[in-house]
Image (tube, rainbow, N blue to C red):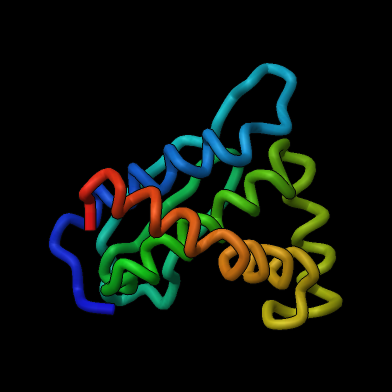
Length: 128
């Protein structure tokens, strides 16, 4: 896919799509906050921590990567909506590392499963 100029708008629309599609596991109906940064020295495409999703536009250079990273990080919110859940991630990380981490595998599978539907949503909204 080609490079994109309006990354923030695509990130926000993808986040909205995730909120509508997946909802929240929290009884309080709280959703994660969303942050957009540009850190060229970071190797992270995105990050989820304590109900905050952060997308690094310096690493996400295509529409495809923007969509997939937002879906990936939103999946982590669904997996770990509460602060104590982050300890579970860390414990599994110590056992499996990143590549074989069960939560990372699930988030990657969510990217693949939902990418096309989100892309169509963005196209219908004339964002891409």
